Length: 563
Image 1: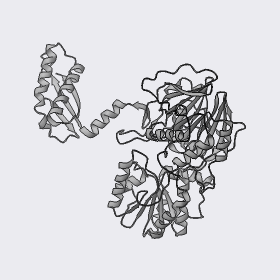
Image 2: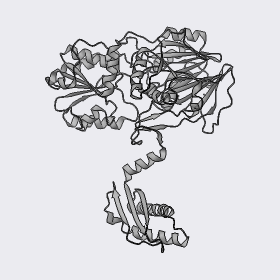
Image 3: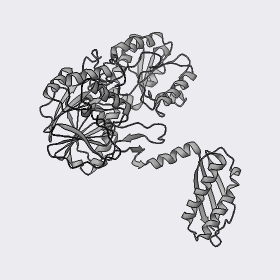
Image 4: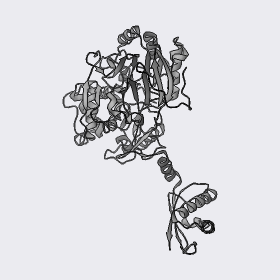
């Protein structure tokens, strides 16, 4: 099995007949999916998504792939191919198009509709090319000849993409599962997978998210009884939280609401936008007069109302979290039923638990994956992955889309089907894989760090910034205002200590005056009188004193004023 190594250097020049594969996101994490294919100096990008921040990344809105490796070759990009419309696969597209707006964006009907709505917020009109399963004619971009195959997932219109080049054939599954009874009757094209296998797949990039889960993923239709029970037994309002792109789950909720005589209102901008797109394109079937505005729904009897909102991952600003914290005009109360119809993205467990506790506190009955069969994954489990390996029989396997344990589990599955271990490539973000003369090998590494988006600022937040924010949040801040006599280098007046987020009384810092006096005396003896240097010395010495005195490390902000 090929493993990445920390000492990997810049990759060598790629031969003209070789194909380079570099994931700039999505390997070792759930999100930020972006894979770059390079041949003969031309680039093809498959997906460009975002990763959502965790608790230790305060103030960050989303996390992007690092475009550094391709930034000086944006004119070489033939197209961005989108496998489906989830944020972790399309959310980064606006930021890449900011750098070159005319890159062709290739995707299915629903995927392109969702990305065009998203791009309106960024005032970008994309150059799009709509494709569908079975398409191949007219889908050549530079040296890349593309074929698209249907896959089912937790959003309609998902596609796998086969990439034919002079170096070989690559099959990228995108996110997929093998639901044999999908709600839209659109099954994963296993016949197409097998046909490509007969042609000869040189590198098979496969979804790893559920590689640790044995067996086959439960069919979407198997959830209907549990969802029906919620609507049959709920005494008052039903409030459903889901991903704003989960059309299949929303369809089930609409069907049950209609069956039990409830009207439905969508809550949240992304939910309203996406469901409007899905309805307009015919992916969501809505009975007449079922959906009403929120203000009209609020006037109806509680047992005749269903609300569908965002916030299934405990996002602080999403509707459900705000309901839990009593910061939303919808007041959750005794007898309301909350249906959380989504999986838990790794890292969000604490946030989701807090939301559940908050809603329960107000008297709501919270139904979630942990206590009812109300959600199934959109990803293939181990049995499905093994099935694919057996029918595709690839020459090389490269697990994608997952944390490192998922990638390793997927690699082990491939080996268990008879794959040679040295033909299973286990990579991380930025690791370069070159397919040359029929062999795929790790040849180097490129920059692929996190790029943080904070409001309108892209890349301005660094790891050092986040460390400062965590310190402010966890340890507090102490501003030290020292007026120093410019002639003597001593304190002209006792310093002031302004304390925030630190439970100690400012008078507790009185012993620090002596520390500052000693610091100034040392500075004077060394001939240091520059205010900036004095601030650095005072900050360091007072910080050390505070750590000893309080066993805390607040941020120290020294301000020196010459008297």
